[in-house]
Image 1 (spheres, rainbow, N blue to C red):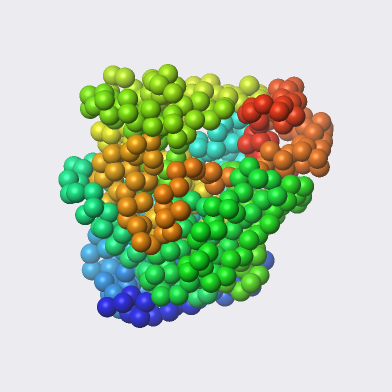
Image 2 (cartoon, one colour):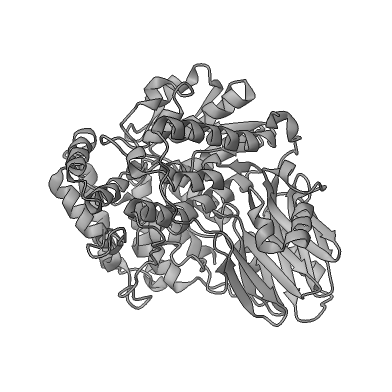
Length: 625
């Protein structure tokens, strides 16, 4: 049966949740919960629902079917939605379905039956426990803190900061990582947030809290190191195709006025094309386009516009943008500094999508991780070949890598391949990955030791697999590239009243792709091989076979010229900047001078746009505290 007809439209789903648990019944619980919900919604005039029990109050605010329910004394509030309702108990809301599953199976088994993007709180009065959890990939955020009267849980820090007793000070370790490290480690450790008094619930984790204030953490889902698939590539591609189309179809079925982000790459193009095929009609697409040609993908997008796109809405972003104004708005919507300059483009795009009356925004996040699309993944694939003793294949892959992807700054040859393997892979334990210390330490000299000492800081690395490529992918999904991106995407879409949908993060796709051999992801120096095979006949051939990868990035190098550069210079020379004490001012001034020189140099040379982006965001955020 076609899911487009089987799953009824549920309307716009944009929401946030709050829950309070006290050691005794408090007459202020309802008011405090409502106040936190108002703070969570920001300027939005959303509906609010607060339900109370003897020691708990659970609240939901949003647009669409209210995500609160009560059954048999059990209360639940849910942010997000389920995509496999036909497999779950019939109920008036997903919150009610969660309670029914919990009562029938217990919490872990209940969650295992759900395919969805969600965060939830569930109060069991008989056991006097409050459970707070997130979906497998953490697409919906969730935080918790100790308050003056107990414990609180919320979808965003702003809601918790509105409650008495929650510390507003920034977490000094987070500030240090954000100021002087690469964006990959902002969320490492994943249990922390940007605020000293607020903890984060990690993905696929339930925090169980009691009225006495104790907290117990349980990871309810894990990817297992199972044997690689042995079926022929053609058969695996067909399975992949069916899974991706189904993931898109299930999400599309519950949306109102959907729109799609579209770049020149495979991931967003695959999602849009699968939706057009499932719906039987072309879809509306939005793209950030740039005056600076470095990261503009207009020409690469062009093949997608025939037959798959009903209307293409390019969102132009110039070179001389108001960096201060946009960053101020973004930080207010995010409750924290934003990871990379790319998200400014996303924020601008979301505002336009909402202004034109769309209700949901599909994206291609997750495609790079699942399909080994990041350039860095080549090193880990090489390491797996080396560990397997496949020396001829290794030499062939390095030769193809150099031929397809050489760059005047980031050279590709046998020497750089071997250096990368030695730097990123443990030679004693094959498959065990290492932190890129060159990248990690690059900006450490800019951090004042009086603020925080990063010496000795080592990001947590997980090694659940025997394959280096799989371990690197796992690290990106749960600790590095995905968490900060998912959070920014969620904040932006919700801020503008849009539902966010990323089909590549369907857990069935993850479980499938973690059993795919590396040779089906990278071969002949070309990434995303299995996805390319799966999308034969769905994507335009020019898009499907394109080897060049521009990468989802933004021309922040030119944003930090002109008034953007003046903004940075004025910040760094200000008394407030010096007295805040985060940075070594002289070291920052040297980097600014080097950035100016790099942009003026006619030969290719690295600049410091990422560092300057982080500096401006951090200053704007800390000034708002």
